[in-house]
Image (cartoon, rainbow, N blue to C red; front, side):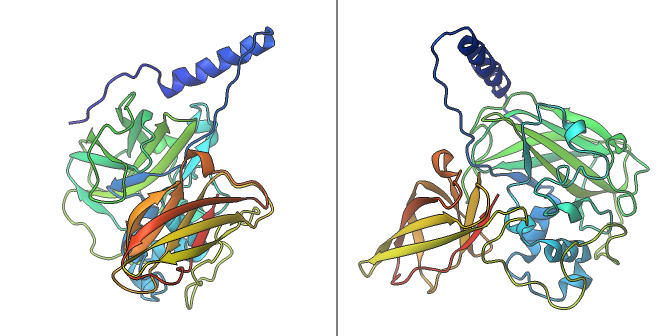
Length: 372
């Protein structure tokens, strides 16, 4: 059962307060306001969003050429930009102001209106996406990894007659079936690992059969950030075991369409000028170590978020404590993301965080940095 209660000041009311303070400035009244968005994390994990689903199946094996035949929609997405899957928790837009239909034109709902340029573009392509079998009454689960809370979640399901394999998603294809209202940060279930909160939303979608799309709008409460996702579901029996073809429209842009997958990125980011790197020093004491990490903006424009991925150079190493960043793991990959005060990195600027580990670690791992 979804636990929802009204907060003293919701995200919407906070934005109204900001407008009021701005008016006080105009009137000559002294006021000081500092607003900075927190780091941005989360997506649907049950049924899984398209990009998270690809990460679940292929995140630890993304160079496997079998993906092209076994999972062609994910293959197209990986080839277009691996960061769509590495940054599975960062598909959002800022300052939408609640006007989602204007921000997300028809045929581009699943990519969040092409947020991040072409990074998430293949998520808009119709085709044989892997589906999760559900009943007419099912539970939709979102992972609020950074405990943002919500002004609301809105859950839509495509209408009966929609063809998910040939028709890119339009607003007219959808029926709004759940609107939660305010949900406090931390209200929900505790995930087994990775931090944050699992938010469960009951959905009733009668009269449907076959392949459908569940579309989510998550309006975070900490800042005007709107997260979006498309999850592929199958109502009733007859769920296909394997996809049989590739995208019917669109497809990868800027990446190969056959042969070996692209190498895992070392700096990440879209072509708009985002890039970053990370280096570290290790102070080892045999059974453990302290690692000090510096993240540097190496691109041509300021960053407002970043994420590091790495694997340990030797077995038996685990993070015991992390400060000035948030730690999570997925598929054997270690991940660190910023906290509110070090998410933004100026051009040529740096931010730092650190962590302690248990186990023998004498050299720093090789970090991969993914900026937005």
